[in-house]
Amino acid sequence: MTKGIIQLCYRKIIDASSEKAWDKYVFEDTWMEFFMQAQTYTQNGKYNTFQEISDNVPAAKGMTYVVSTAAINYIRQLKDIVPDVANVYGKLCLPFKHFKFEIIHSDVRDKASHKVAIYFYTEPITWIDTLDGKLLLAYGDQREALKCGQEVETEMISLQPYLNISSVILSSPAVRQKEDNLISSSENSPL
Amino acid sequence: MERKEFLRRGFLSALGTSFILPIVGACSGDTVNPVSTTETTTGTTTGTTTGSCTTTATETAGPFPTKTPSSLVMTDITSDRSGTKLTVKITIQNKNNSCAALANAIVDIWHCDAAGNYSEYGGTGMQSTNYTSVHFLRGRQTTDANGLVTFTSIYPGWYSGRAPHIHAHIYSSSGTSLLVTQIAFDQTINNTVYAQGVYKSHGLQDTTNANDNVFSDGVGTELASFTGSITDGYVLTHTIVVNG
Image (tube, rainbow over all chains, first blue to last red):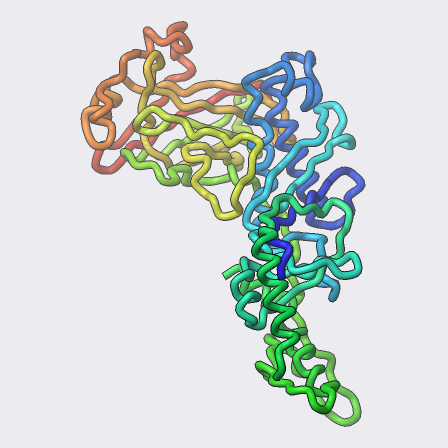
């Protein structure tokens, strides 16, 4: 009756071409933090990029986290709703509590090349079906409620770039078979 | 709670409409038992009708982003750590400007807790939006017109091989690194603090300033001044001179 329980993950990329106000704040402040922190590890210009520093300076292993401190208060401003990903009504909808910050590229000499990503991980979602390229979803684990014939509120979201199903717990074939039998037997039974 | 938040923001208001549709379009013979036909729209979406036109419904302006500082920017950096209260007052002076106070300098400090442990910075993994105590005893302030920053913290503990200290990194207002240094502590006060409270079980420090591999070349510019007591807490006062 359901495909299973999934977690969606949206990877939001922010760089110098980002235009939204929130994106620009994150770009500016994470760049500043990278610039500040990187100076500890550049060794008088020997290393300039995040990649060079990460590859050559073991002490810089915490830099991604430290740079993320410039973004976390902006992430909290989102009130635990994933940005950019809208439902079929065009409204933001996906709740999240966890995120991962990534420095894609940064260079102390070139602010314009600074590029970061934030992965927003949703809480568990019940994936009921896929209709016309859209996921039919219910928030939380609703497998039991659906099985019991209870009404469950649902949501439809288009598959779109940078939106991934990042983990899945599939309903077992045995369970699905049993559910299918139940459905067909109830369809055949006289009212 | 998040789900309720989501429901308010997203689709429950629309669900009210979708519930009504089956009733209107219900085929005869079908039994339709709507669970609810109550309009579930929340907020102030009811328009006001006067004359022949209707005032457009008011909706929330939505969350607008605002400029916000790094989570490192804190006055009280104690977080969940316990210990003897310590107020840290650091004044930044600029050697390149006749030792005048340097305003708008960014000052990062960090130190260990009573047991001698630093907060570990996380790796590159997942973080939670509501996890707040991840960087205890680390903080950032910007100097005022007098070159002063003030932090509230606890008296640092010590770890083997090092004399008690606070790390400080000073940046210009544009983020250029000006100085990385450490602040040294008074041996007499260390002995008093470490003999009591949460420090007692860890005992007295095993390294003095004179034996410390960082401070042994002299602490003339690194030793802070102290006032206060165990009961009232201590106030650390220190001046750091940079080439701003």
